[in-house]
Image (tube, rainbow, N blue to C red):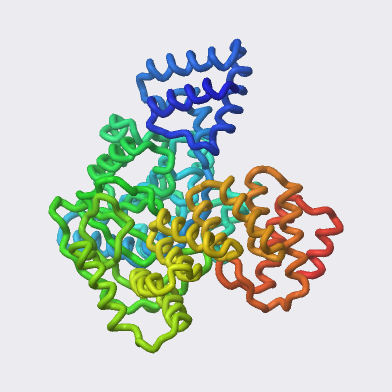
Length: 545
């Protein structure tokens, strides 16, 4: 398609819907337009443009219900989802937010405010429903007496096709790629087309197609009032700045007092979050509705924390010892902040020097300090890790390792822009340093930029042809794109690298996993998609037994 005309399509969709068309989605949009031109037997893309323009201008029930936009929706948004996505935020939900909401609801019921406790949750941008059903499993797990509650979990999405799939509740193995086997066995049952959600969990959920920018649909929908918890993760990446601000105001109005909002990491940079409290957990930021607009007084976490940080850049507290959240004052630009906010720039620099002088042994060598920083990262003490690296940067500004450790800290705090900058500085000092490249690939994946992620993974394999993790991740990208032959090649390379290793040896792939576990993972990936020849399947089955 003519690039200028495609740009006009993108502009029209953005103006009418608030959605921005990302560079990586333009090819899919162009192909979808070409199919519509053929299906409608139009003279060309220009004729379809005028048809779409007129249809959107005259739509009376909101553009999301217009049939043409329903067809275009899959091309301009990515429906990628899976169960237990972002384990750090799942940990916060399971061990902090949901238990607190349940406690409040029980207490209100005992005080006579309602015959039956109610819990209302909304997954805004739920795609094919994995997030909604994940929430349902958490609620059922935390509520043994769930039959005596009014539980409502609403899932909405722009894409009506995704909503229909969510209603069906049947999923392939790919949706379970980050879940333990017991999760699948406990909450799903085998189905001819995969795995079907357990019937009792359907009682909690409701799915509806929805455009977040249609304010009329909010006010007329009783399910969008008095909500206790809203999840809107990896949705704002599609919206312009002003559209995000509009939606945030609607979220605030829809939430109960002290209700919670969870978004994707760093999606709200530059937004005015003055009406929300910021609850800072090691894994993520949570926004809580605040009735008062004045700054919130700062408190600090009091519970000791032991945190194991896997290589995917998220921190997961051990169940026996979980941290409380830190409440920080509302910021104009959230995410980019220390856990203990300073009152001024001068105070911050003074505190850094004081903290280092108090905690560091003057006789410590740089290598010993770097090890201390690694320990702080493993404990989830990301601000302390950043503080400890400051003197090292002054003493040795050309140390690539320091910048990489700072990148890890920023990434775990959700400040992906700072993490990217620190990785790039680390690579400028040492272009062959693989760890910053892995982190950049994970950030690109988090930001749903598959093209950039693939480019980084290919660079890793150029520098290190023995990287098992890079082969598996690159093969996964090829599966998503329907490139079966390329995926087979990547997975076979990973398989061959694993063969000489002892089955119980630990290797690095999104954390430390055994060789045997990775072999099983590869077996599932390959066999489910018919990627292997018969000879290769025989070889895998023989070696895995």
